[in-house]
Image (cartoon, rainbow, N blue to C red):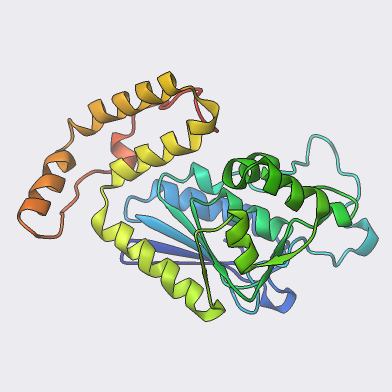
Length: 274
């Protein structure tokens, strides 16, 4: 894994840290490939129950590395370039991914947070998808994630103006769950991740996440089928009994489910983002 990414696992929680503080964690130096590798590891490792994505202070991610000057956005070979930036996205990970945005998140630094399941933002930081002010346009699936998170009106204002805004306005626009002082963002995200790791059933969360991310592309009837299929699978697993008994006996659950071993092959098919 590239030094542009730090990876740590503690008590079922993986912390992925964007780590180029000398350039405010600008997206470069193999960061995209390293982040994809980290996500892939989180998806495959049953010992990891939740993921926190953050940045080494003083920023979360200042956006694209502009050290190449005017050639930063030069034309690339059509077969070798994708605006996706990441081969594995946060929504591909079958565990909750929480963005602990503890400083400025600009351009792709902002759009990668939109791929996460939950976002905690620093109140004092600046945010924006500024690419239209650099002669290009928003990337990282932002034209798909942002409208489904914030609605078309807010997405249009963010994407078409390229203006920046603070954490409180980000909350008003609907792009984050909580706004906190900078130094409280990461502890709060880690506390949530540890709560998930301790108290939620691994397979239940994985199924729910896949249905949730596929919901905008599905009809009500398709969602009913997905929920029903998932229930048939989950109700045949030991954790469906364990969850109820742990609640009734007022004790911590001892989950047995393993996403790597018990995931139905090919599920959920064409529904969703796969």
